[in-house]
Length: 248
Image (tube, rainbow, N blue to C red; front, side, top):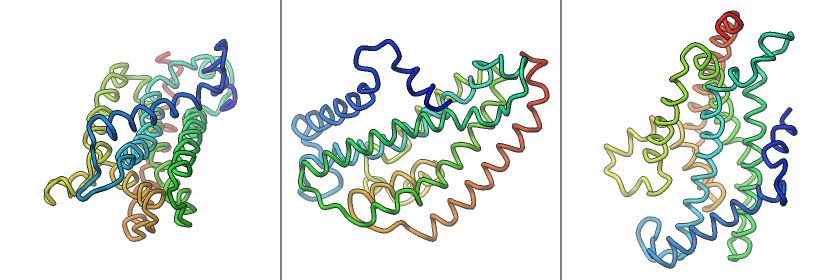
């Protein structure tokens, strides 16, 4: 189903799956030109490389796009697969996994593009990059928990899709994607960690760009929280799925 989901997105286009590679290359090129050469933006203080802002921005957007693609689709997952609800005995709880698998495919392409650009710029590759699955795993569990919850709520309350879209926009600008946490007062930056994206974005940048190890204590707390949210999301989904057929 994940394979069909990925291929179906590009079915009928001339370049097919190649678009999944062209899009991030084009966006990273645009970010480099606009922020590095036009605005001459620098990340943090000091005289940093003109390409760094674009790379840091792109890395943050990789994390956000993974989250956004799954969560934005969640409210319509059951509504878009009514045949699975009414006609056959189907494990509906795997539908968010299908959406996550499709999003991970595009995330993998984006990461490949990032690594190619890093290599082209002569960036040093650190062994800390191997920690990427460790950092992303609790994040994926969090995404699944929220996806199960919103997929269920979306059946009964159709407006939730609009609310989720608005919330994602707020989360994007309340995440350290376009600015470093050091640019904010400490009292404000503390509250940004209530955003589920902030910690992951910071850790992914640390291990991919700056060769730093993850913050293990915060990662442990984040992992436990993600497991609880995933369990509660699945529990809610299983409790409410009996009413899907009646509503649809």
